[in-house]
Amino acid sequence: MTRTRKPGVSRRATLAMMGAGAVTFATPWVARAQAKTIKVGMPTILSGRVAQLGTSSRNAVMLEVEKVNAAGGLAGRQIEMVIRDPEGQPQEAARVARELVNTDGCELLIDAEASSGAFAVHEVARDLGVLCIHTNPETSALTADPKQHIPNAFRTARQGVHDSIVGGSYAAAISKAKGLKKWATCAPDYAYGRDTTGEFTTYLKRFAPDVEIISESRPKLFQPDYTEVVTKILQAKPQALYSCLWGGDLTSYIDQANIYALFSQMEVFAVNMADYTALTVVKNLPKGIHSGNRYIKTYPATAGERRLGRRLQGEVQRISHQLVVGECNRDHAARGSVEEGELRRRQEDCGERCAA
Image (cartoon, rainbow, N blue to C red; front, side, top):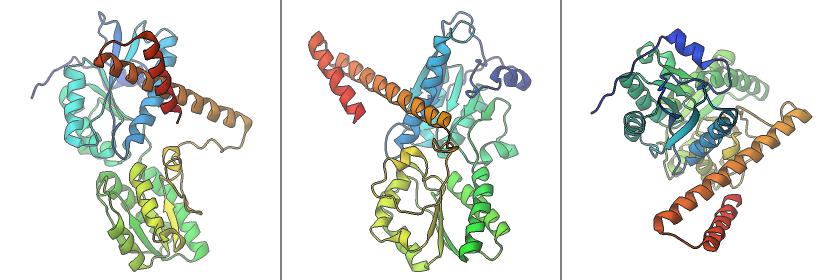
């Protein structure tokens, strides 16, 4: 294993460089004066059932990169994103993160992994001393656990404990109002799922001491079949169900559970259901699910908020179109040269697929 050391800076200096902007990579940790661009590496899931995590992360970061580069870059240097897909595998996340620094020359890592891969990226940051910003993983232990602490890693993602405190309080109020004393939980079997569910039930019981957890299910991450999980919940006959499944796992679970009319038999609290990438994918959204989101364009219900929502949606669609056309161009170039008219036709075809 190759380890590349870099000269470090103090935590205070790093914080000063990060500033107070919405995107915390506003200044690179290590300045390479001769380099024309600042390379920023981003490992994130771009394939498989939870690819929406990576695509939404990529689109979001490109919005900010375009804005910064159009304004002249950082200290006169343009930002170049180097985005890689570890395919949801922690060991691949570690390998990709190390390669981004040692081979691609990235000066900063934006960890847009799920929590399962974030710990691996975190260890690479510990080993190489490179600045790392965790933007997606929500497991509190990633930065709250003293054993995990390193001075060159920060997080901008909300933590599961934030959802759990507020969600526990909210769910407790609903429980008292409707007499929901028997609860079941369904959470992915890895750090985020275990930690967040444990925190939620802790605060639910704190605010509603009469609540009892009568069934717990922990499907594997990316599990294809939820029949056993759904059957277990139905047999337990809870009055309410909490789940922190997310992305494609959540939408697959809902589609399969709908076959058994699961959601009509209990009150459902699915903290990640309101994510737009999930809402737009699920085939038949059950009514009455309680959920939350980082950003909801309908709240507060103001004209300014609606304008912001439309602008963000338009920008993301534009960037998605550019990325798809770019991939098509590279694919066509790899297969050999084509006539200009044929290339234009293929670009238009790519654009139509993106729009669809």
